[in-house]
Length: 215
Image (cartoon, rainbow, N blue to C red; front, side, top):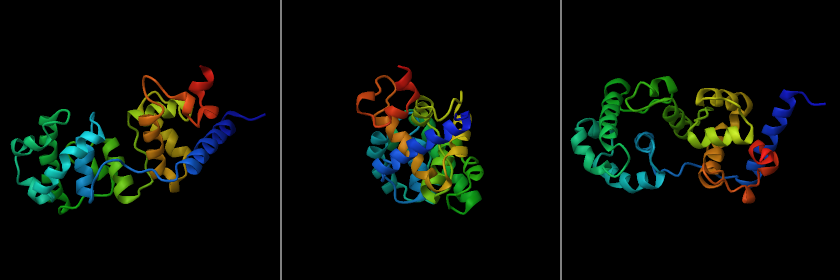
């Protein structure tokens, strides 16, 4: 008879195996060409769709292609470029502050260390993990609302907050697939295991899912 840890190990193995077999390619839907563009896009994406962010960033990046140029701007000058995203005023302030900090403390380069990333205005733990994972391949797991929901529904974590879910995922997902595992869970939550009406009838993970099997 399996103990609790053996059962959890098998669950992770089954779910990650399904993703590896069925979703071999998974990546961010944000459009960017550099770590600076990535961190800018991730800051803008807070409580906003990637689709909307991708609509505003081309003009923003054309006007401010480097941290040095953005650092010289004022939030009021950035606002017309980002006014259609959520919380545009505060995000414009964060972007200018982030750029100034990059120039003054990091020589204009986006750091790869999550603690250093969190020193930047507008960058919390989730954003830092996203940038470290995507831009630098760091073996960290970013937990947003989608990853949090999917992880708990599948039974990968019983964590009550994002930090506990992040801890559980980090302990159980091998380092080599942590960067793509973040996208697996996020995209599954965005398009299949949605908040209000999860599409359990077309979900390949239903056999392993605590939420589905309890329902």
